[in-house]
Image (tube, rainbow, N blue to C red; front, side, top):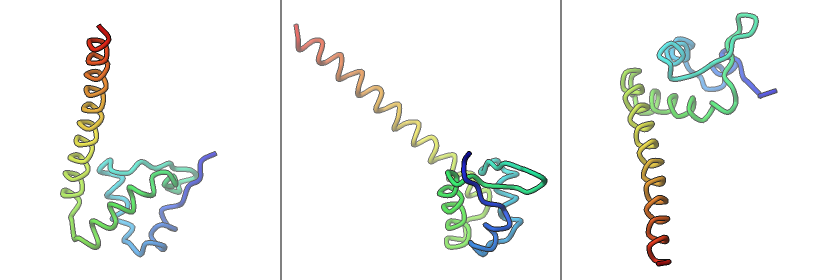
Length: 100
């Protein structure tokens, strides 16, 4: 079973507004699990939650800004992955021709 932390605990620990957490969930930036009407964040998702919290409270980035940054970072990560795949493919092709 995966470890999780309740929304209420996160609000206390990180000293954030509960509405900020709910806005992250409502916008699709955070995935949660609900059990007995208690909202939980999985421990594996804590780093992204911390990142959003830092950007919002330390850098004063609003929710639409967080959404844009998150989307751009996802696109960059996808491009990096695609680039690695293409480089590997190119390397295999190059190796094939060097063998001849």
